[in-house]
Image (cartoon, rainbow, N blue to C red):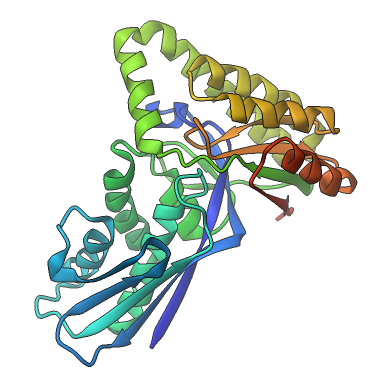
Amino acid sequence: MTTASAPGKIILFGEHAVVYGRPALAIPMTQVQATAEVTKASRPGIWIEAPDISLFSDLASLPSSHPLAAVIQGVFTALGIGSLPALTVQITSTIPVASGLGSGAAVSVAIVRALSEFLGHPLPEETISALAYEVEKLHHGTPSGIDNTVITYSRPVYFVKDHPIETLQVGTPFTIVIGDTGIRAPTKESVGDVRKLWQAGPARWEKVFDGIGEIALKARKVIESGEVQFLGPLMDENQLLLRELTVSCPELDRLVKAAHRSGALGAKLSGGGRGGNMIALVPQEKAPAIAEALMSAGAQRTIVTTVKSN
């Protein structure tokens, strides 16, 4: 038996604009994770057990476009294995689906790690990330690559599409409260809607993407210099641009307002939007009260995380 896990992730700044070549900042979320367990099977074939989504199937019965089938087949292709062994892949996850926490990428990374190790040929991180990225295309259509990157390497990253990975240096720890609207919001849909906006008026939306990108650049400098008190206003500014992109929603706006009322220094949606999660920068001592206020305002769950200095 071989087991491997992968964390979730949260985007701090840059969502949507990152698809169009602007920078984004993201951190791993170790409080939630996906786990893959690979064991020898007593019956022929490759069997997939994913109880969280009520999936119990053999690989041959799934279409090649199914994300789980695609990632498993991707491992065999990468390793040059043509004769498929008899085995079972069991997947469990504590990461909410379609909530902006990187559920799909985490599952892919966990499977690649566990399966390649089980087969005796552990794959390097670069290959793991590349295989997960291919599966991200099935989940999101035109992914930026940030989910598979931050989850594979499990460290804060400064990310620009098609550029080398840069680790984000954190000068001073800061605390984030995450509020989950409970609304499943597939990133593929919001990314597709933003693309339609951009295609209908590229000049206008390029300016919005530029604005989001500039905020991400400022945020990196603030985080690395340790002047994290300036992150709050940058979050608020970013949220206004995301609302202009039509990816916020009443539930997210309500949580943002509740966070501010209860003492947050700044707040914004995180991820694709239209549901999923919002994040708030908070004084550490106020985190429990702000989390409680978010629950009272309709959040289905909250997570408090501290981004540690490195």
